[in-house]
Length: 497
Image (cartoon, rainbow, N blue to C red; front, side):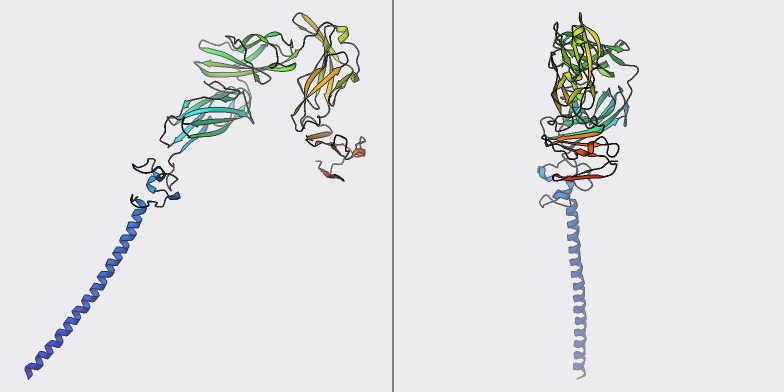
């Protein structure tokens, strides 16, 4: 009986031991499985991070590049087997995106440069296209909005004034230098075009250069023929000669480029010495009756490189030669409204030329008039003929109604009974047409505003808002305060300061 009770006690202890073992195993298994789960999560996050840094060719590979491009495309070369679209755009931290073609300009020296002193423009290329053969293609030089002959590009030939085409300076080394010389003070805009021929890669940049006054005392040019103010006959031959100082030394070469009224003069038979042109015919369209400006640009080179540049100019008067007993009128080619000029009466007979005349004997096709009946008379020699002349002062007092903007030129004819008429061009500019009145023209007519220096003066006030058959409006303001006038057509406010 005692034996049986002992066996039962052993069985209960065994059950308790087994329970403890099972419970411990359960707790261990739970902790182990949780650790595996955390490891899998960490592995997934690590893999995701690595995928952002290393492109998986079997995935989408977008990474964190802006524009959806892979990060590894930030380098300058495309990996083997990649499509062209795979490597493009700009990635964070990449200073130069692929397929870039651009230029930058740097002045040397920076700032201003004196007249006739050479300066440089360095053209720096950025090219990550993989293409070679980049060149400077063209250069143009402007003053304001107009191409100018005042600056020249060394070692290159102008296609037209201020424009150089087919420059063809290589940029494969990453940079190229352009050397310039300017013969007149001013602010010049230099524009450079570069590209790779037979591709779409190109770029243009511009920079400004300030040239200060003062010709170099070591180099100058002077026009010897024709002389300043000379009278020359249309359809006659003359020589164009320039003198250059100092005389060129061994290895130095001078050349000249001539302009007539801002147009390049190209002789039919160029002289071996371009600073001395022989037998130039004075004929239309290069030369005009009236005043003509002759300009010469002289250049000195050593071994093809420009070392100096200088400019000179003269004004000459070109007239038709009169026949015996013929009187001819002459006027400058262009006159500004409000500026005084001379109407010249000339011929071969002194008594006929110097005959007494009234200012009312002259007529014009617009608002111009001879202002004095007392001319200044004299004579000049053309060839073997003595020409007698009398200069009558004249002025064009207002623009024509057809002139819709300043600097519009209108042809005017001046006439004198028994004389061959003179034709010239009238130009107006508010800066010239000042005095008491300023005039602005448009396609609707002319607005003329006049300021009288004291109240109630000169009878102007009886003519406010005068509407004429020409359709123009005149307003006269005689107070140094804001002045407002109204009628059925509207209101005009004039501000006087």
